[in-house]
Image 1 (cartoon, helix red, strand yellow):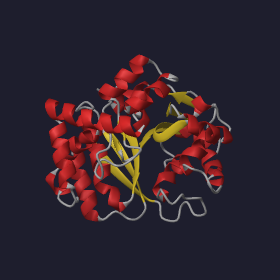
Image 2 (cartoon, rainbow, N blue to C red; image 1 turned 180 degrees about the vertical axis):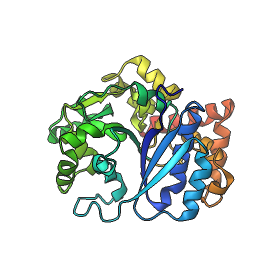
Image 3 (cartoon, rainbow, N blue to C red; image 1 turned 120 degrees about the vertical axis):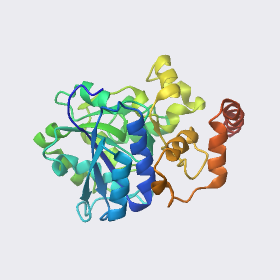
Length: 311
């Protein structure tokens, strides 16, 4: 149950081809919070969202989600966009100015399955004068030199896919303008994420890794790196019930780590939303198998053997 009687502000950004993945993320938010928890979802868009999609979101959200739409066309001209990403990834940089009436907000990517209650987090977090609450990565050795070039220590680099943002403090310090200026630098490996890391250094609050279970948090071959930053209990918690962030291959395309959870929430979507999504039948079939105990054991054993051979 929410501590405060208000809609929890959540922001997602997506392009038209990510509409169904965005719906899956939103469905996971609803299913893992109280029926009394309500959300105001701000959708940052690369183009105007067609009316039929807005109607489908209303069907999905029911009485618990209210939606607002912001067309971002032309708002981030001149920034560097790596060819691996879309401009939507950089929309979070200007949230403080886009939402001047909101003091803090939860931002999350649309390739995340939420298994934690976001209302509880939102109502309990203390940000002080920090810019945001983040989940620090446990980087691999080959990433250290790049992180150092950003002016950070290895244990100071966070993943920007899940953030609790202090929009009020970001406005006070005029950070949106600074983010945009820094985003014009070419060659950044993760443009928006690197900018946030550089400019928010020393102004972040660390959250439990269970709020952003990135790929390297979930694979056993990276356990040693994880334990350099977090505890064994954190490792167990992440494996059991963390939010799942598909930072590598996407679960609707490949058999990614814990891909079956994405399909679990896909199955729970209203039929009208699922109808237009191109399903890879073999992948969906495997996800169904993995959702029972024996199938899960067989597939995990095979996957772990392949990863052991690879790594």
